[in-house]
Length: 174
Image (tube, rainbow, N blue to C red):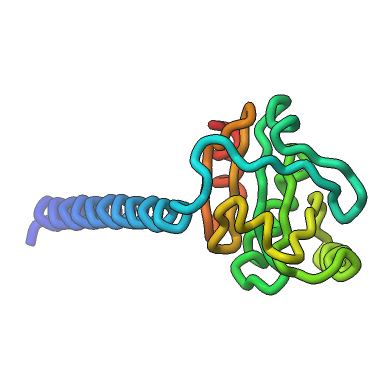
């Protein structure tokens, strides 16, 4: 075989693999969007339920009012949720420069939640939804669920694993 034929074969192989990677990426993206849509179909799509309440630290939060200053990331999670342990560090990181309010669903009393937050070194406000009523009112059927609220309206909903960049982009494009 000549050098030209070997080079042409390598080029063909590279093009083939590039096409396969593109197909795989498109498939995974479409699959993720479909799963996201299916999981969030029971959640409100325009105006969120009112949420004005004290956090476990006694701080008063009003999601709608806050959302007029800048978008608010509302994070529904639970201490018993294994996927939440992967997402919570990203939410904590994002809370240092953005408005984040979390709702801990059926995760115990305020003292237990405060201990958990300290142990994990998470730094975001927590509303204790010990009965699960807030989650039900918002239509949350899976944890973690993340809702972006801007100007009193829901601009984005996602559930499951997400990356820090994915969260940041949702806030940026809200």
